[in-house]
Length: 165
Image 1 (cartoon, rainbow, N blue to C red):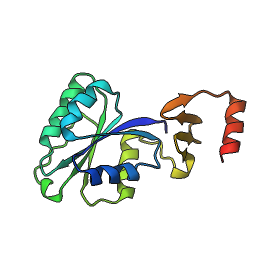
Image 2: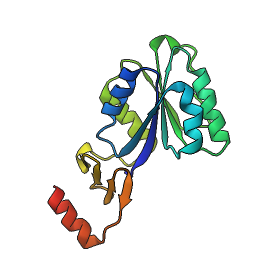
Image 3: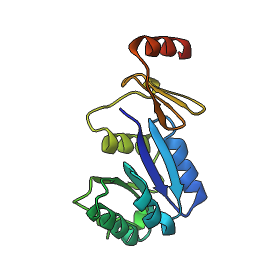
Image 4: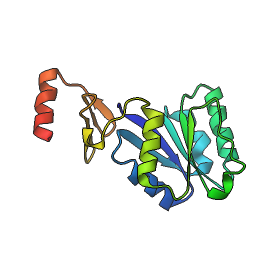
């Protein structure tokens, strides 16, 4: 796994906080915005995954994402919908996508995010260590501080991981 940027677009503060907490153990940098800010945020950020709170009618948000992909974005999509929205749900086929039904567990959120961002690279949560702004990924030998990668020589990295763990 390697650090990816995830954008959570939700108008509900509780949903946004729940998603942030659920993904806290993953090697991701999280950004949050309201649904009406989605188009603007997508233009200025290289986002790896969009987690959209589509509620009862996710179509407008899906269209914004499809337009961004047509303009060169390579973001993946995880859509959170209400159970009543399943009957008419259209998940885009040209974008790697998945969906969750509101009420899903945090473990399901993590499993679906991993599947989208790192297919075939299943890594246990114990392989990513977070301490405040520091993220240490033991599986990929990557270190980030406040989202910025830190370069180490082999010996520096070995000493650093010894001291951190």
